[in-house]
Length: 437
Image (cartoon, rainbow, N blue to C red):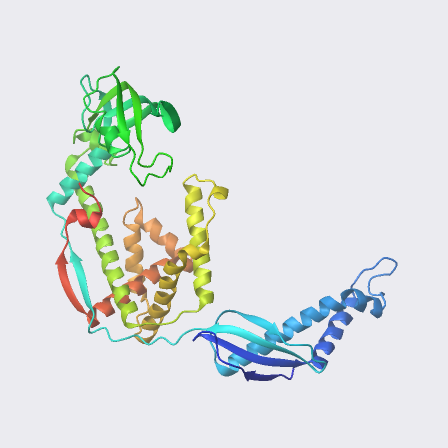
């Protein structure tokens, strides 16, 4: 097929390209006729046997469809040939803009984006903090205490309520003597000082006994989400049905069994807690350093990214968020999710994807088989039968993709650290774990 091609005017952004192309109408009409001839051999119409429908009738009914398909195929072929000829890396799909009708040729403009050229900048001036934390008995003790709190039970207190207690209450809220919407509940569990309710409300629950009734004032904050209550003083009446004190489990054989130590051995429990904690600490330290490395790469490698890729990534992130919310029991129709909400995160992901690909390629940081095996072994070590998990990964090569991707990321991290100014910095356990225990 003969075509004419030329590059037209200025692009709308640095990655946009516009190619003016044309396809001779004679070539398109030839393709249309060939399609209709092929179709006429099998098409069925009332009153005619298959393959015996007059060609004119086939052309009348299917000519428009055939011409549309012929033009589409011609555009695709022409565009593909020109892209290969100019060695262009097209991002996304082109937008085809037909030009005014021309008897001799079908003329159109293909508008598309290309991948940017990625040149990784100089990392020698980048300072990266590498957090360090050694797991000691203190961290193991603190973790066991957190596990105890997660298994807290409650029992009748037999005394006045205090911070940390769980109360079961009925309450009614009134504004100017009239009950307001959302201000009433029955058999409502609340922790004294737990932060679930307004501070004034929870403070008023201290010192109460089972069966007590109390009436008190509460002033809603000025930025309260219900506009008709924001900044307003209301009155609550509370009836206390239960006062329950927290009871932490003892660190004994029964507690060890709840953590999966079948024989209840306390020493073994501590060893398993330490091993799990060391894995979690390692993972979080790696995540922090990896994030710092990615920030450094972005800082020294400013690039434009194709809008098409950002839009596609935003859509995937929106779909993932929707799926996550559905798994949490939320109703999809009540959660309109706009891909544009994820644009900033999607842009970062696309930039990093392009930069990482260039670093891996230019520095030959591809995952080596022995590295992938070590990563799979690490995945498997937390399972009851690690060998079976390893066999599962290697039974189908595509399952190794996640491990290979992580290995390549780790290779990039090590390379960036070797090029940057690295400062080792001790980090507090609570800061790393994100808790205030």
